[in-house]
Picture (cartoon, rainbow, N blue to C red):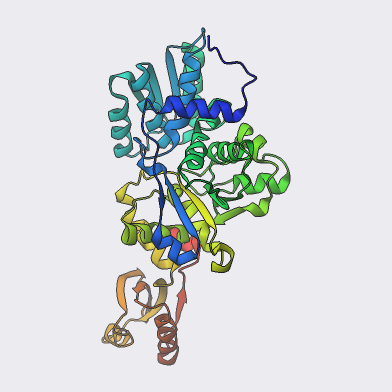
Length: 424
């Protein structure tokens, strides 16, 4: 039995978790980022959770859960989780560390790269079972396994031991900042809320009161919706592009810690804008981030330089498990957000020389990246999908004028989500 009692404060429990965590890996760096500091006018520090052994903060919660469970007399020898991402990898790494058997349920649709990486982290101590096409099916199978085999279910965020583990991020930040300096602002990504709940609770517990800013995907606003309604609600639909933070309902334990914040504290990050941030960090800083890992950095775009000037700002970079097969899609979304790429459906004349006439309207910095007939059954005209990329967004104003003067009939479908999903 643990010698510590339930009278320990939250901060004391987190401090102890951080101390024991050092037996697994060293603290992740807190780095001044000069590019972002110059861009936004503040003293911006990045807490690099993408540099943990599993390239995300999820290892912290999993470790603390195992540590505390194994300290109890009735501890299970077998553990189970459901995840297709960072939680699975953190779980696998910890299974190997504690030499405990773990079963990981993943959807059949999980990319092979993620499966292989999880298997490397867990080695002989884990087995992976692929169940169903969607996460909900996978979760049901994991819960059934835990019930039937007496295995301990390790949730990704909604458990006090998980939240305490994630809060070790704040313990490290407080120790890593220059002596006598406290953050004026802490920017946190939000998915299920375990990280945000733990970090805010820790800073409050040690008597520091930075301004907390939360960043959620625009397509999965579970915390903002809950704060606006004054209760947890389950979203009817989420956009899974930011897969590490696409959660339909904020966790009960995290919400308990976050419910005193305002809905205005939560910034919704458009997915295409987020892609531009990912590309910026890759090209300028050489930092590879997954979509959820770039959320907090992207939220800085919502502030003016005047608001951030001379402020000490800590931005939590939650993960860097990026599948480079997604890079073309990320670059595409980034270009569309920046106004450098557009898609049009043209009513194209079916006559010799029509294509040459169209190409003559292009400027020196304009490039046709896609040309595809959608319908050619009409005798005089055919519908053509044309993608155009350019170097300056104002070039599209020039093109629009040329198209109009030349009498070309067309429709800009760049921001038409329904059509874009069907034909782009």
